[in-house]
Length: 197
Image (tube, rainbow, N blue to C red):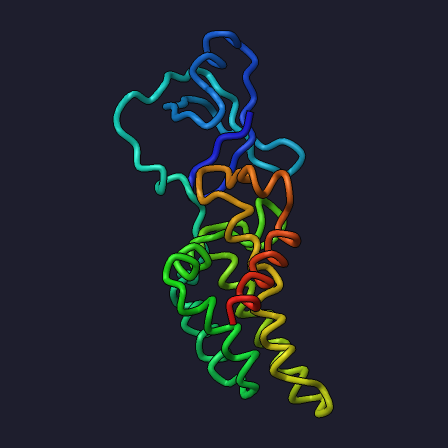
């Protein structure tokens, strides 16, 4: 089994009293686990010797991985770069997202992925800001690039992840995320904003 809290995940092996232990370890549930940490193939794993369901109240946020940079800090950098867009229509499109408080709160909290990169609360904003900074540097280096389109594209490239991945333990895909994925979701979000402008 995989045990997860805000610091990460740990592989746990259950060798004895399997049925009783696995009864306490339900997917998405909370448990108190006892065991011994061992090294196997240069990785830590827990040899579980006991477990019981946690019945006291739990704050699910205590079990969400967080990056070193809070999402709100990354959002401030995103806003700063977005404010430098000079094309009025592109600027208006980007502002339509950044002026939406519900969307920016979701953006600041969302992970950029379930596993591969920036898979933690605030990861989407951190990743997006990084891509925007890379695009800004590329535009400065290659003078004939449309910087405004590059910055806007960097901001919007993963906007659908605000809907695709739930900010819950394990960062599960939402129903929309499972059925459509972040690219079609983002495309629809951008088309909707363009139509409203």
